[in-house]
Image 1 (cartoon, helix red, strand yellow):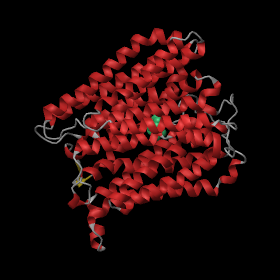
Image 2 (cartoon, rainbow, N blue to C red; image 1 turned 30 degrees about the vertical axis):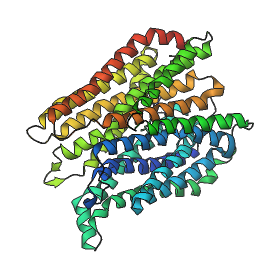
Image 3 (cartoon, protein in one colour; image 1 turned 180 degrees about the vertical axis):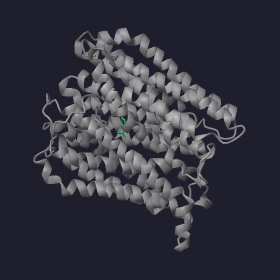
Length: 492
Ligand code: PHE
């Protein structure tokens, strides 16, 4: 999980295993974000240029379903790791499956494309919750180095996310690489697959590091943490995930779109169910599901980075810098870059404010407000494209604002999950946090279908509706803050 950027950047020595987990996650995220950076461009590129020739609507729905599956499968993935194979095996097996997935995408052809997507989703479901759990296991519950450790881990995530689009974007999109391929007698329309292959190489490096250093983890994540598992529990877990996945996948079919209301009905039902019970535990779980809805709203807009914002950067932005056309995938490095630059500032800020810092609900409202602000910036940006391609500075400001929002929500929410969940349910509630990301990604795909590149006024109102959605959610969050504080019963 994206660890909590919470505490001091202290000089205290970290446990020996941390640096390994840091580099393994760095390269796994390199593979994921490298693939994501070129995915939509590959899907909408004409077949003659080596793409899939999808319409933007098809590409957006596919993106939403794929990235939803990646995070939804963290629920059964974490469950399998906890109960059957242990975190270390889950990282290893998940990692092999992810690498195979990226190489399948590299192979080309429709069957390989679908196989690749399924493999990356299944593999990430095993890998991502387990590597995060292993970071947590490096520390005793009250170890003061814990939050700093997760902070380093989150930096690893974002260093991978920063480097990856630079590499895959160069391979997939640059004239330089196309020319070089052609000069060697290769077909320049295959550059997409070179990009996906780079993602596969990244994941292979991650696996290599993990295997070479496995001795560092004496006993860590070796065995399942939960021993007794009833068949009823196993069946319930798999039926629930498979059912949810299937319903949300068929919700794109004409006539079945109403199934998308599940995205809001499921968390609202959970809030209603838990807030009607009197006990403290249930009250806190009700609060968790309010944060769930807020996070879902946030990710549904945030994930436009690989979708409508990516298409904007590709089709409507002036990408020629000093006479050189920069690959549009490179814009996706701006978010991780700002996380790396601003993350430490946020740590210092929260630490300096101490008990006077905003509470979790207020930080969530700030995140949603920043989201609204970031999309407001895109309104004049869209309008400006009526005359000339947009300046890249619009996107720089957009990513700056939305990244500040991410830093108010992602690490804060993660830490809130661990504090609000009853101790025996921490793992499950982390799965719920990934589920919020999954639902948000699905919604991002649905919203992405509204993108248009040949109607500046229409595009401006499209971006304005994200701003309105985020602004309304921010106000709702503020209105709920007093109630949430009561539900959280002492947790800030
Ligand atoms: N940048 C984060 C990561 O890849 C995004 C994320 C947040 C993913 C929450 C899943 C859940 O780790």
